[in-house]
Length: 90
Image (tube, rainbow, N blue to C red):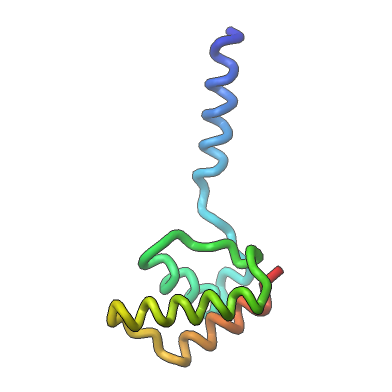
């Protein structure tokens, strides 16, 4: 029984982590666009992970990357995502 307990605990932990990530304002246009656009190439970063200034730097980097890959990222979408991230940043 003692040998099985660690496996059970690890399994419970992994199952609890497998759920969908929750984000602030999930039904807002900014959150929806953030989820849609920012998961095309990578996992969804936690919104509260960065300060507004850090998000601004990351958005510039992502814009450059998207331009290199010829992926459209209209200014209106960038602004909506930026405003969403600023409202919910750490």
